[in-house]
Image 1 (cartoon, rainbow, N blue to C red):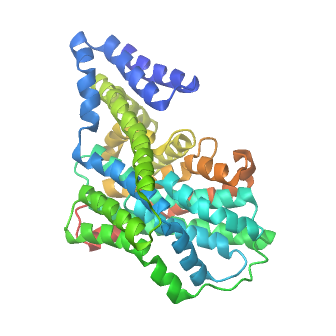
Image 2 (tube, helix red, strand yellow):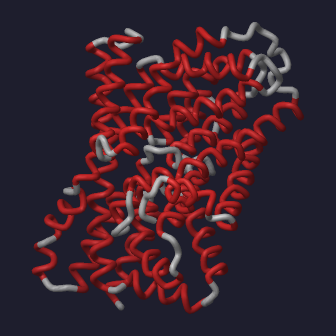
Image 3 (cartoon, rainbow, N blue to C red):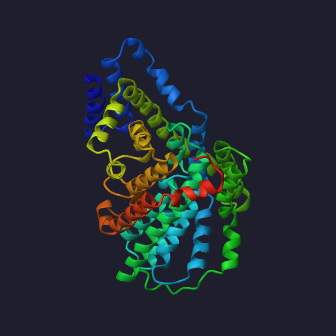
Length: 431
């Protein structure tokens, strides 16, 4: 019991003190192991940390991060924006809808919300400003729509979920995330258009519509990226990890030879930047492995799960509690940390109520997606407000609407699980 209190107490104290999440996870795990187990366990800490990241499927994470950065630098986003403008046309609220559409497509390349937000905001915010959209509104809508990247396959969040939950087919998770991801995009587009009409944003949008045929041809290389990734997975041509490798090389071909927008200097830059981001993610996963091992070995997660189950034995009430906790966690923690911290606790609860693991994985991803654009942390929003040059406080009056719409989308997936489960069942995946 003492070791369990040390594990959770030290972790909470370090978070409140502003310690980086990776350090808080690792240090609290080490202290719990030291006080709760013998010295032999302490001597194995380095092995535990290494084994947490020495997993073949995790190779896909740095590769998809690299893919997103390559497509960001290769001019794909600009061409997708032109295509979306050609489809939507010059109308009030049109650019807000364009931002949502482009974010959905870009999410099918990177699997990362912040990468999606950076690529789309860089292209869209200057255009939206010229058409009368407030900077804070533009930053809010782009941050919200970029959150769909962790639902639209390939999703880094779903990759981590498949590794931590035994027996879950990653291909089934990818398929299950597609329709909820589109539903989330629709949920964000609705308030974006309504707010644009209500406040007269984009009232001057009367320019010429880009030619659809030419825009489509120019955007084809970018549109083919998710087709290659998902088509290869569905056909069995390659595994998710191999799909990430294919996506990287396809992105380089697009940037170097098709769009000719990348140089050797750009390749070095994206390799260095993606390595830096990947290192941060892997350090978090490695040190979270110590935290998870300590909590599992000492029985802290089982005890916490029993405590939740003692509150109620009704599946719906417990699910609502879990969703609320995940939603609050998403406001202060990044998505990777939420998965690593909460899944050891949630797996016994899933087993107790017999919840479908694929369906629950999608619900988790949707909650984490909301957290990516809900202050105070809101990693996507931090990216877009920096590009828009506004304060995060200025976005609250705008971002509350897509937050409410996304929560409604989560409720729909809870009430109608087939929104997530129909496609993997139709494709014959084990769920």
